Length: 185
Length: 106
Image (cartoon, rainbow over all chains, first blue to last red; front, side):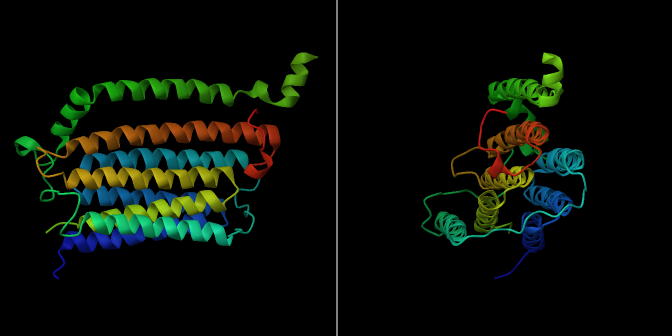
């Protein structure tokens, strides 16, 4: 079996992203968790670039590795008195491990079944993503997103607007018991 | 030769299992939120993998990328609402331990 550079890069970046995610979820320092989860998101962005999806790679870098990571860091800074506060020791129980390992094996088995020679998923050669010879797919993606899937994009906008209103309502200060008591007095 | 489909699906499955492990074991609300994000990213990776390997007969697999764009927006929205819940929970209960937040009403 010969390995081409894209496959080698994918293996390296995939292992690094998985390791970064695992360290993030197993770390006891919550700030370390946020830093490593930023690395995890950036690793997945590189995988998207390798899969000829540069727009999604940039979106992943901007939204996840950038905005979401910073948002999480701000949440930690607002909530914690000491930023480097250790969490309780991880209480891993046997049923949890069994469930996780079983789900992992089932998913790996499905991946293997889908890609065997007699696969139930007959796919074409890789990389056939855009019609019309668009090498970076951005034009095709834009046309598909705004023409065929325009209704879903509208729905996403409505969901974002309503969740913004919900988030502002949830985070309002009058919900604090002391503030509520002062107002009632 | 390109990145094999089984490698992509294996990475996606491993990430899903990792996120599930985080959801089931951690007690801190922020960590559970991060674990849910790992699961969401595993799902998004699946969409992009199948857009890279479109089913035979399909003109292109670009729809998978469109759905991934919408999912990234949805997941970012979910983080914003989740962090608003974190702030409210911390202000009202003084803790982020989900075991102590047994009432849905804040």
